[in-house]
Image 1 (cartoon, helix red, strand yellow):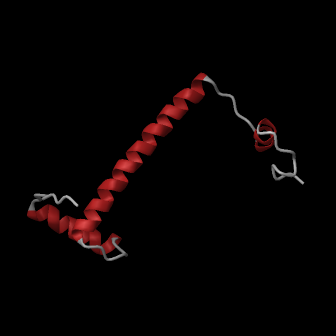
Image 2 (spheres, one colour):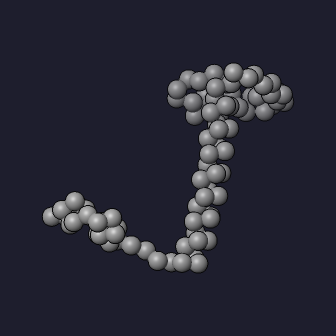
Image 3 (cartoon, helix red, strand yellow):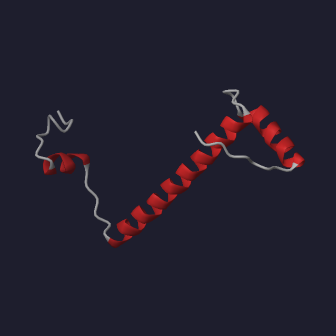
Length: 84
């Protein structure tokens, strides 16, 4: 595992510790909390970018399909598709 060092102003550390006291129910240490937060932030930004791309694609071709239509496309009968 690679280790990194983070320089942070005293007032920012105080702010981070107050935030952690309120929003850290798992009781993570600062390193784990910051690592998890950064990775979640990256994942959120990637998800948002994927959504933006999907919305642009949908604008170009706004075709939608129902659950039953997808079942038919996949060659499933109505019982297999969840319709009884």
